[in-house]
Amino acid sequence: MADFTEVAARVWVARYPWFDVNVTLVGGERGLLLVDTHGSAAAAREVVADVRRLGAGEVVGVVNTHWHFDHTFGNEAVRGAYGPVPVTAHEDAADELARRGEEVRQRYADSPDDPHRDDVLATTVVVPDDTFSSAKVLDLGDRAVELVHPGRGHTAGDLVVRVPDVDVVLAGDQVEESAPPAYGSDCFPLAWPHSLDTVLGLLTSGSVVVPGHGAPVDRAFVEQQRNEIGLVAQNVLDLAARGVPASEALAAADWPFDPDLLEQAVLRGYEHLPRGQKRLPLA
Image 1 (cartoon, rainbow, N blue to C red):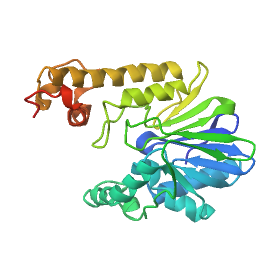
Image 2: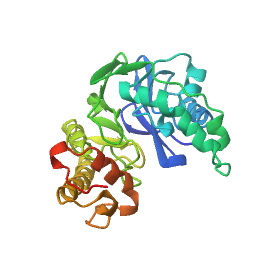
Image 3: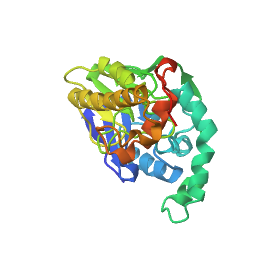
């Protein structure tokens, strides 16, 4: 159980201990938009119970900020509770979830001691059925909600949700507060700083930014994180230009985050280098 806290008029955020993930509700006269659905059907049933306890209305639509299972595996249970509501995501996020959802389930199948194993294995993956490539507006009657794909970063299919009438942006895992930004095997470390520049273009000095994980933040926090993510990208570019192999890169520079968390940032960064910036050896 988690409490939905109102961070702006008719925008509520609940923070769940598993992954410290945020689930957000945006209210309008047509009902509630649920942004991200948690990591399993069982976890999402808890979310549904918390939504009903809030008593602000019925869910009429779902948005997935990216494909990762801690944000999408609850889609099944939300539809079980509210019927065939549309599930909206960037087209790349839908493609990745369809392609890689079973990989996640297999990873849990191979982890018998994980306390969430059975819940994940009992979950049916529901792929978003309402997709877009660049931007989309969802109509909640008396409120328009804007979805923007800022570019590749945490994944290929990230989106951010802007509620312009109250100056709120739901950033998904483009921004993280309770841990350093997560560079996974599907990240785009060289593009991520530029994607955050787009996110910053949606913010004012008074914006409330809800990260994918952790407490709401402000524009200054996003600016700082953008600069740190930018330094990761710049280090990769500089090291590659000097011919430093990827295998030696983490020991060859000062990093803004724990180097143990940046293995995929370096590997993926070297993979994505512009052709003219590659120097041998890079292995």
